[in-house]
Image (cartoon, rainbow, N blue to C red; front, side, top):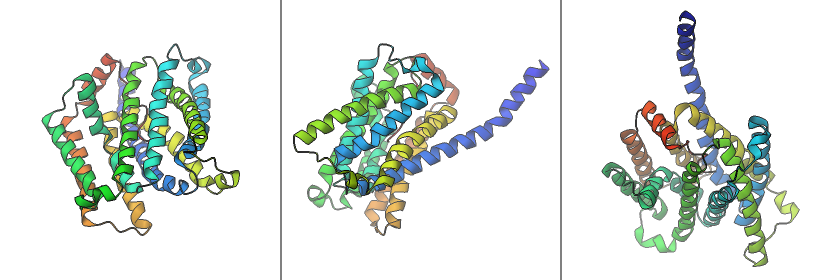
Length: 334
């Protein structure tokens, strides 16, 4: 009894250290993803959206499969009869999000993409309502309206009559990619028995195969243009960042941080993504107007208020998640 009490005391004493470390992992992840849009924008000056997606995810998928083999063993490399679902979900998430997102980003600004990606928690609520009939609370619906108003301010710079002449069509492609990613994340619950790492590694590998096939088809159709090796060699740092830091290290850090702090707390860190993107924009010499900054504050404020007001106590949330066979999201935007 004494030994058990001492062990419990040690665990309690270690909890703040674990929480601090987990928070550090989530900060690293969101900062990495916030910078990712500016890095991708630079790379898109050399490669088109299809080939950049290929160069990003094929190396990342290979490395992720190796990590899965090392961490969980050879048995984890099996699809366990879920191969078709993993391919469909991976194609939706990785091919859909990356290609659509990069197509939109190539014609828009990194800050626009980041603020749209930050809407993921609220978009998830809407899809839950449409697909599962789980109506959001009035507070969440209000947060969605406020956040969308903020996005409109950012995209239009406060001039609604200029929306059609601006980047609205490009930002719509980014939004479509985000919806693909939300669907991929929600689909994780339909593959029981898979850890977050196993689900991510398999779906990323199979999704990368779809990216290769779509890129080849787009190239044959003349929509995509294969880059020469010297063109690829002109953006090695950008590709390495998108693939290894944004696609692998940030994912592993996200999973580890969420595992300690829980998804409700982890989602709050997503607010750092648009803040980081805007900070980078300022550092690069871009000056944002009052409408854009007000839009960012509306989006971040709506996300924080909705998260804090609607969260369950952690113990109850974890119990309900286990009962429903639901794991935390495999990853956020990447």
